[in-house]
Amino acid sequence: MSYLIRRLLAVFPVMLFVVLFAFFLLRLAPGDTAAIIAGDSATPEQLAKIRQALGLDRSIVSQFFVWVSQIAAGDLGVSLVSGLPVTRIIAERMGPTLWLTLLTMLVSTCAAIPIGVIAARKCGRLSDRAIMLASVVAFSVPVFVVGYVLMLVFAIELPWLPVQGYRSPVDGLGPFLRHMFLPVVTLSIPLVALIARITRASMLDVLGQDYIRTARAKGLSEQAVLYHHALPLAAAPILTIIGNGFALLIGGAIVTESVFNLPGLGRLTVDAVLARDYPVIQGVILLTSALYVMLNLAVDLAYAALDPRVRYT
Image 1 (tube, rainbow, N blue to C red):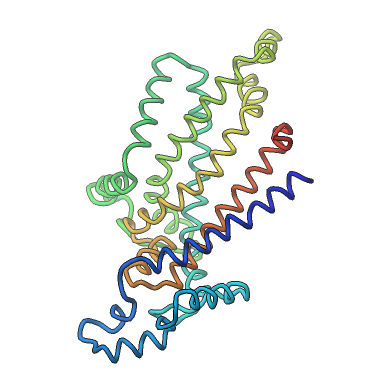
Image 2 (cartoon, rainbow, N blue to C red):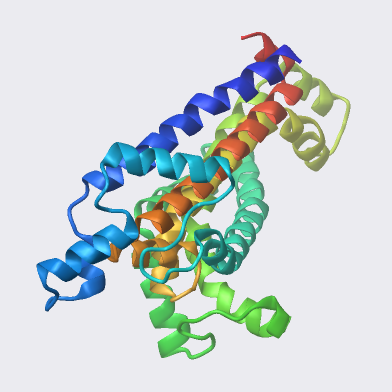
């Protein structure tokens, strides 16, 4: 219980830093929202009226406390560009990003763990070296390069899949999966490489233990030794890297959604940054940071459940 309380208390300073970072760093960025809204031909008087209407003529400290009071009331403010509530805008754009993240994590986990186990089982052999080399290449190539190559091959040269766009699952499972296939594969490639390497390292550490040799001496099959005895004990580091992988997905989703024209939070962030729409940018940063903090909290609690020694360190 004390470990749970300590971890929950640690969330508050992290989120306070995120709030300060999201507000003041954006205000230090160059650019004028009023000028973007008014256009190049706007007069100084028109710009002043827009700044006054948006509250941008107040001091930064005043704007900060107004924003914090809105957050405390569950209100993320109003978009400076569209005039719509930020919560409504984020809710409308969250679906594609959530589907992209969940499908990528599902595909990556199902593919990477068996690959890592095989690499550990074949340690030092040609298949192990091939897997490690492929993982280095997969993790080193930028996500946007992978996306454009896949698009060129499977959507343009071989017109099997749509080039860009998004279909909701409500429109049918087939169109939804066809539009999500290339973005999910693009994001999965570096994540599979990362999880497979961690799985291999963790499995090698466990496979050297005495109880694994005892299990083999009892005549258990290699599959039973690997998946029933070794993998559960090697799961803690794998679970940690899967949780942290969500941060990689959030960062990669911004690029991937732009490449495949998915109307998710990534595209929303890019559009908001270009328009200096501060409330929208701050809302997305707060949401994604809160999700990341909660995921790390869940991973830490699961880690402590798997290894009780963690609770006392």
